[in-house]
Image (tube, helix red, strand yellow):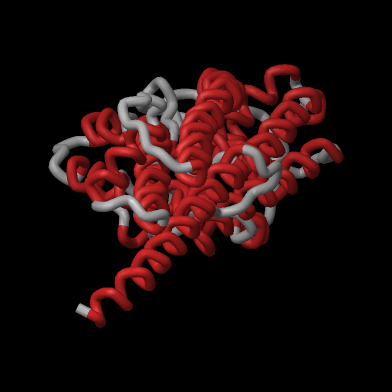
Amino acid sequence: MDLEFLLTPALRLLAGGAGVVLVITTLSAAVRSFVLPRNESVRLNNHIFAGIRLIFNFAARRANNYARRDHIMAHYAPVALVSLPIFWLALVGAGYTGIYWALGLDSWAKCYELSGSSLLTLGTTSQRGFAINIFTYSEATLGLLLLTLLLSYLPTLYQAFSKREVTVARLELRAGTPPTATHLIDWLNTSGSLTDDDEQWALWEQWFVEIEESHTSLPILGFFRSPQPGRSWVMAAGLILDAANLQFSALDGPRTRQMELTFKAGCLSLNRVFRFFDVKAVTEPQTMMPGPEPKTEPTSPEFVQALDDLAALGLPVCADRAAAWARFQERRIRYAPALKFLAELTMSPETRAL
């Protein structure tokens, strides 16, 4: 009896301390997710997203074609985003349950009932004591705050998604079916000069800058799939970079500063998103369900065929094709690993490299 009398206050104090830590950790995760204006990986959110991803991967493995897998994975990001405040509220409720027990309530059942009533602002339970009332009011405030944070950022997230997909859809019209870098160069050559499309390259540069900012500050955005199954922001980024790389490496002609800026912006954007997920994400790409084969390095015959196609369009193709191939490979290594990783991570649709 004496031992139990001595242990109970210590256990209550420990439960209260653990509850405070749990509440602060959850609130910090919410603030860093939606308020902090910089790209910071939140470990708590990563665990939640990774757990939900495992469920969707399990379902996707049973799909017998890519269209079915794409339909299943299209629900992953919305479900994960909606689940986030549910887990936050559950953790806050558990934390306050420990706090109320530390403050002297008789049983865990009463603590849980009071915590749930306060968190959801139901007001079904009343307790005496000034200290307990302070914590019930704070819990109710936190519950409303967590929901408000998510709801206030949904318009921002969907606005960024809409802007991203406008460029992806426009690129599909310009890159042909199936979309390739050679088709895109053909479209750029409609005026008879590849240097006359600086405005288009400037739009793509802006798109890459926005991708870097939005997909690292709101990482769940990268998993929102395009409305059409054959589209992907990863595939679109690869097409733009391959088109620029092909022009730099295989065509004899002037290049504009805007083209070079767009290529540099694309490489930086993809690599920063790649490093964000590869270094800090909980789930490595190897543990995820692979989609269709991602974009791979073009083989030399493919490259030769691309040069033949460009020559047929009347473009000034470099005479030394071996040197052109070497230059193409040298530039492509700047973005190919990031492109492959992100294609696997997001289950991007299959696309030809050239």
